[in-house]
Amino acid sequence: MVLAAGVAVAIAAIGTAAYFGYQNYGTSQAAPTLPPIPSVDPQVPEPTDAVSAEPTPAATNVLDSEETDARKLTLKEAFARQRVSVGGRTYTRTKVNITAQCDKVAVGAFASALKREKCSRVLRATYVDSKGRYAVTTGIAVFPTKDAAVAADKKKNLAKTVWFRGLAGGSGTGADKADISGGYAAGLVWGRYIVFSFATYSDGHTPTTQEKDLGPVSGAFRDHTSQVIEKRVTG
Image (cartoon, rainbow, N blue to C red; front, side, top):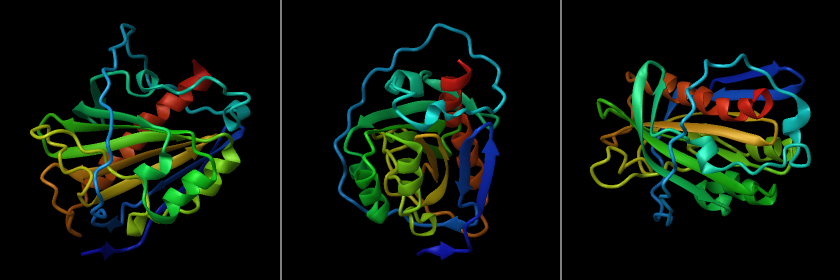
């Protein structure tokens, strides 16, 4: 059953480039039941450098076009660590995926918009917290320009889960229902990228109106993953 109570939208400007944040903290929904998409599960090497302090938000128009931001985004860059600390919890990466068929990992008009706006790749990873309560899919969609990313983003409908699909992990990982569970979405457009997250309960149940914890979890992952894009500017 779809439980709709409105969608919160936040818009902020950072530096000289547009940075649009959004989240559906007021809406819970059941994800559509769709056939599974074949995915790869490559080994992502752990980096040897220490984790730096969270950088100050910054952006420039270098991120607005692949002409000025030509380096391809890789799984190693996006999801370098097997374990991450997000929102005061420790999560373990259970699955990673990269595809050039962007429309195959999204739903409805939003999926069509990804293809129309020439999305070149979507990188996703799913994480499960140490207590096995949450399974969170987070990722980044790559476009040729900021205008293309913004145009595609306009076709999302978080209240109806017209959005990116969750990435399920294997049996016993705590993420095996991530692609069919109800949950909370959060995301932003930063330059030519859409950064997104979708938080669900590991047992697969759709959140009730009384369960408010998934919203902050999703938002925290959105912010965590956005640091990948930020570091393209700050180094």
